[in-house]
Length: 202
Image 1: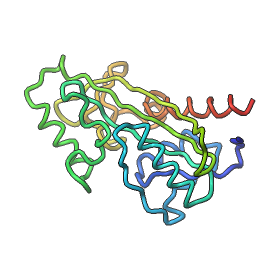
Image 2: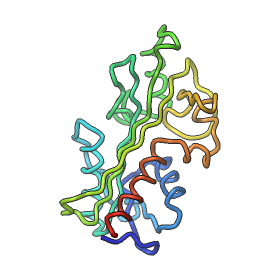
Image 3: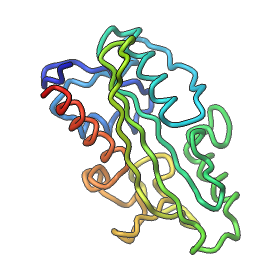
Image 4: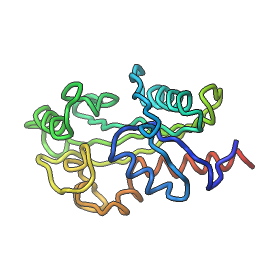
């Protein structure tokens, strides 16, 4: 397995926010979104982040015939027994906007006191050398925080405006992109993934 700086890697995502973040973190590699190959996003039938990430990575590698990276990530809220979880992107229904999902989350948490609004972002990142790769590289990241009572900030995407970052005393959407990438679940998972790939090459 190789992971040279000149190697093209297809990113199995159509989410502009995710693509932007991953390209920024892996700036030394030519990352190509699967949309450039007209790949249709596969159906996420898994019940866990790991299953869905593997499904997406395999689909991209199969259609693009290139190594692929896929992530599956979401928000886990303790007071909601782990929801929205693996359906975070479609929490308010198929085709829901980020704002729709945030509104639903805040409705579900109405009346829940601050001390019970603990939550975390989870990201599982998968690298597959080819569609039949029997030993995909899997990494994960966890970003602990809480859920605000209303949205604050204009940066980021998804649930960022209502995700409280205790160490910075602000919402995720108030963080500059570089700071968010240094702290976030996705940044953690990507850095771990690249380390694991390099270690396998030794």
